[in-house]
Length: 360
Image 1 (cartoon, rainbow, N blue to C red):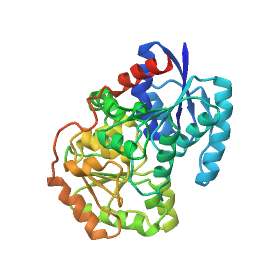
Image 2: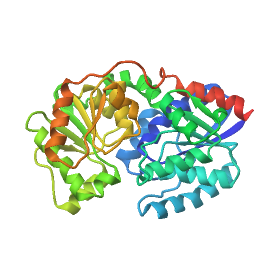
Image 3: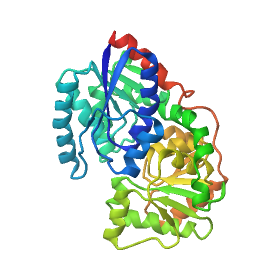
């Protein structure tokens, strides 16, 4: 039986890994071992996701988090090399654009282990973003590139990557929404716990370094959300990075309903019942689209450009408090086109089928 090692480390990767791990188990061709770098390590950011999504316990937990990007990536590279030596994978699967992604790809490349990149081809065209650096480098190291959209495939073609490496299978996060959405509606009590009414609140998330490491941008977002909260309740599951940044700034929200990070089922229930979602998360932008909820992206650009083109998403750079607040409130009336941009929710079995042919 062929061996796959899957490298994960951050919350979005747990979501992406869940449907693929399920498809790998159902296929029976491969034995999968999960290596968790520890990039997201606390219970609300990690443990609860493994439990809710039914992901197998990691074969290795590396416990690496914090520090600068270079220090974190370097520590992961060394630890992953040792893990690969012990686990002897026939291929390594990495997801998305985190430091864990790049470290996994680098370690595998230097050991001549074939690399599979799931969610390949995304581009914001802002090379200052750590995520952009990670995904570009990973794409150019990978042997198989599974893209979520035609736009991502075009990006790779423009960069000269061979077409035979690229497979447009759709988005594994769509698989996850299809697999877990009904369960979330059935079992999640988050709306009752937070005394929220369906379609009568704004959900926001903030975690990217470009916002949390820049006090002016972060406070613009918070002030805009406070302004919105005069009209609609605003719920903010607070990422540890944003919490630390607000503590440093000495600014705590008054009108916003700040809660601890929530598990996946609670999160997709909050997303699906929101009037508007305001976020700097790539994954949340897509989950908003999958659930038919208008989204405002609190960034200068997005890698999910097709969501802007079809009208479900709009950019609101956090440089002007009033403009951001107005964009969020105006989004309540916006509805985009309904065509599927990211496949039909069966990306995971397609990936496994292609892997079976490739590895054999």
